[in-house]
Image 1 (cartoon, rainbow, N blue to C red):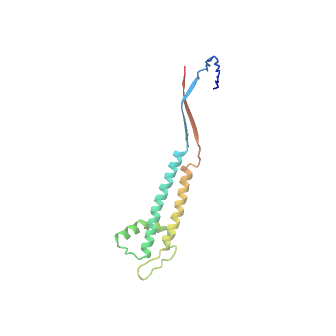
Image 2 (image 1 turned 90 degrees about the vertical axis):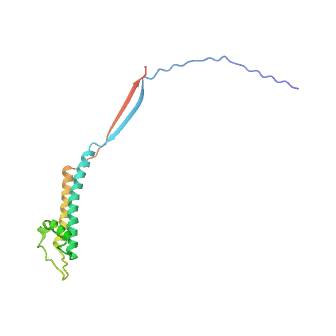
Image 3 (image 1 turned 30 degrees about the vertical axis):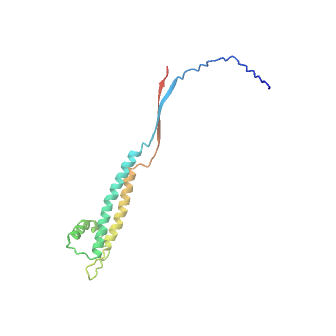
Length: 155
């Protein structure tokens, strides 16, 4: 039998303490915000333009209904037809007489002046909408960034 011996050497263990300086400040939180300073004015201008288009859209719809009622020969004494004709009469009055008004034997009337009024009011809506946007809208855009950091000192 063979005997084996191992020798294990132990060295003395030295412990060194390394001291690092304590941090002067620690960041608790950082808040970064970005916003457009012109956003409120742009939104207000957009609402005005939408209001203009809504008013002219209602006018256009009434004129189209008038044109269809006249073209189909609707009974002028019916309540709805009276209402539509009464509301739209002042709107088409400036255009009456530009062209002749062809009528059929069944009471249907083709009113070209109503078609002209539809086109003119659509162009007027576009012009007024653009004018409102130029006067009250905001074309500028910007981004303002703000960073806020709260620091706490460590004694």
